[in-house]
Length: 104
Image 1 (tube, rainbow, N blue to C red):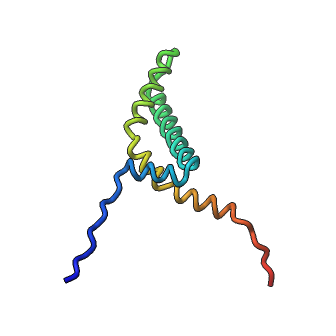
Image 2 (cartoon, rainbow, N blue to C red):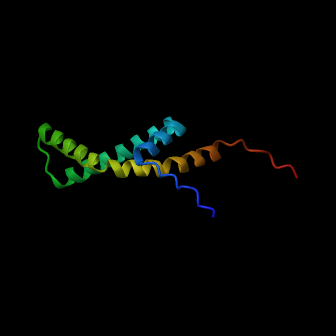
Image 3 (cartoon, rainbow, N blue to C red):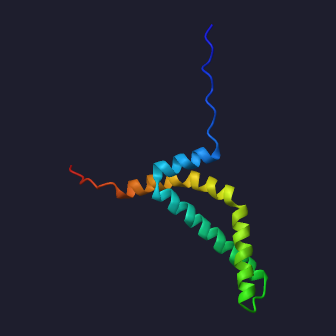
């Protein structure tokens, strides 16, 4: 009787992220930091909108709270980077592809 081949274990999140960064390099890092910046700015805006800021210490508190909230979303940001990087790479490659003249 033939037995099915043993299933290879699915790589964990850290292994997938390392593979993605090795394959896409600067693009993956750029996407990660763009997502980080957008999330940080979004949290800072949301926190600031609910708090009256009177001085620099309150502003520092807002940024610290926004950074902490952003850190809590790190697993989701990594997953978003894993999902978006191949799509952005394909779009970038499609836009960079040389246009061939249509000869008819």
